[in-house]
Image (tube, rainbow over all chains, first blue to last red; front, top):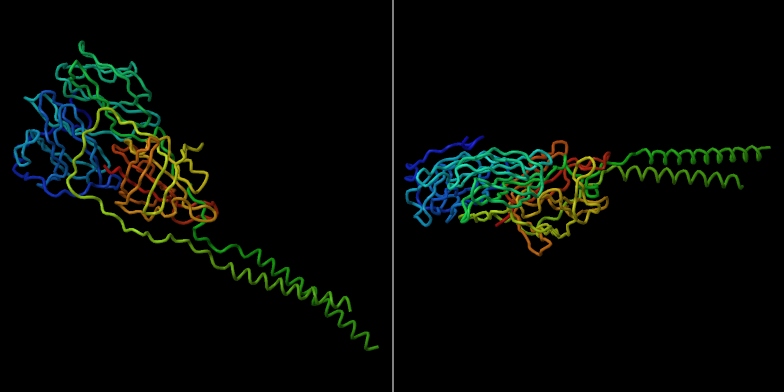
Length: 288
Length: 210
């Protein structure tokens, strides 16, 4: 299996270089939270290919939107938030003129609210650009983990986390799907017969990780990338963050005031009646 | 005569009570108006232009210290941060006092990868709370979070939305993000006197400015 899921193998488009002039003015970074935004990060995962400069262009726009300089083997950029749409990517030898012919180029459609990793993979003689989709949701209380195998020295690598196999004999230049695991701080190992690597990593609840197996100076190395993070358990619904002291309020009930008026009327009537009676009595008394 | 005097007094008292009731009735026929925030002193700052050169990601996730205080100079917010958890019914716990904001410790820390959440009250029973002027924020405005290791991380507002609590977009607000983001949450919209709660939430979205 090559890159699964939304993976797209992208043809090398040498013709695209004709469109590409030098990088000019670049618009501001897009909002990461508004509806029409997605994310992309760039990676160099070809062990025998020298460092490269990576350019991201809005499709049909000759001015580069993002330029990453001197991306060497094993480097993965942070995610860049960009407006959803079609983009083209070009990779040139580090320091090469922005107008020069790219070593590698391709296109990617970035959907709103989605994240992608664009990686130069394979051996130098068969370099290709892979774009894979990155997950942004975890099952409640779980972490997600996947493995990318970028060791050219070892054609098949098995990766275990907390004793559980998360990649079995994974071939060079391929990736597993994400799988949910119980969160924790545990031992991770990459084995290929020789040059095995182990380290301890933390996979927290609500986080999404990519483990990249690399050729190191002495055998295999494991790079732990945090692709995304949320909470182990999202709060449900909104928050009750106000008591209304500054809110507009409707008129209160008129009933208490009406009761007061009624009581007043009763008093006045009683008083009035007694007054009348006493006057009447006096008149009667004086009349005899 | 004594009876006559008493009757007169009762009659007069009755009239006074009627007038008091009528005055009370008339004076409370109008609702109290909302208190409006004072206009912001500084206009919204535009997002920076120019080429964006992203630094390569370090292999291991960077450790980030616990947040201790929040500053939003444009709307006069400077508050220490308490920690918040989930309530028994699974909703977000809110600060017990209206003068401080709280950070949801069940989620990412501000400046780490992911969507960090800070909630504060718009008001108390009597007057404005710590996030009274939150809905004045506009894209580009700056938010600062100071951490226990004395480092400060700056965020820029990307969007401000108001949602009915009945249609709160949990995934958009609390869901995982691949970059360092911040959410400031308070109440807004109409106040329901029957339940004693506002009907809406105001959510400010921000991303780390690097």
